[in-house]
Image 1 (cartoon, rainbow, N blue to C red):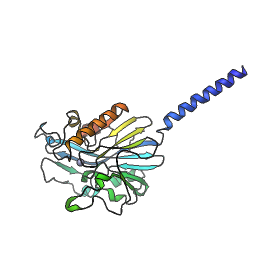
Image 2 (cartoon, rainbow, N blue to C red; image 1 turned 90 degrees about the vertical axis):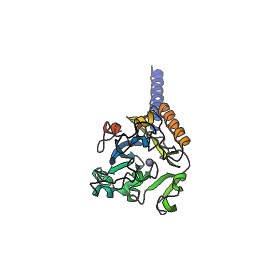
Image 3 (tube, protein in one colour; image 1 turned 180 degrees about the vertical axis):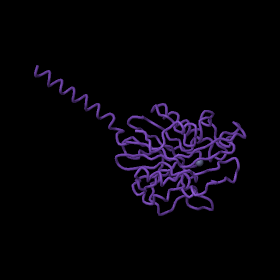
Image 4 (cartoon, rainbow, N blue to C red; image 1 turned 135 degrees about the vertical axis):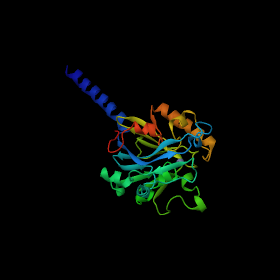
Length: 275
Ligand SMILES: [Zn+2]
């Protein structure tokens, strides 16, 4: 009797140990908030999926995602510049087929409402260096930037650098497990730009999500594997979509498409959150 209860205790301990060890792998990530980082109207969505829905306009959104991890806060994308919030007429694109953007709420006000100061943000990672994703990078001058080397070194207009040279940066070459516990993984997904990246996050209750960046722009664009005419590489874009798709299947992950308004309208915005 005594012997068997010791055996039971040992077995229970082993079972608990096993139970605790498995989820601890991804236990560091606590919450994800979706922030409104812009809204707009795309003039002609065949710009992103050539030959499909020519001349059709569509509302677009622009999201930022704030992650609360036991080791600190991380911001994924910074959206359109907060300065745009002062312009009710928004920002009219040079190409009428592109997106006319508005900023209904500032990023700063949404962080403040959550009690998060810019200095609290440990990591800022941007999917790529288009202005609707990098508009507020300099709101976080102390935060470590996580950017692919290929994107960082991609010359801007008139050879201008894409980021302030004094901004702390880690130049990535491929995928990166940000906190070392498997809960937040940057995925190298080039094609839209030379060093485009997406993000795999594993939340304790919600499970796995892939945040697309601009590897894809909206659902039908994903369904028909549309490659925007302006992407730097069609081959890389298609390979990146396949990479996302295989990770999505392996991790049973949802794919959250940054600019897809219909999908975003079905999701909880901050101060609501996913855990
Ligand atoms: Zn883009």
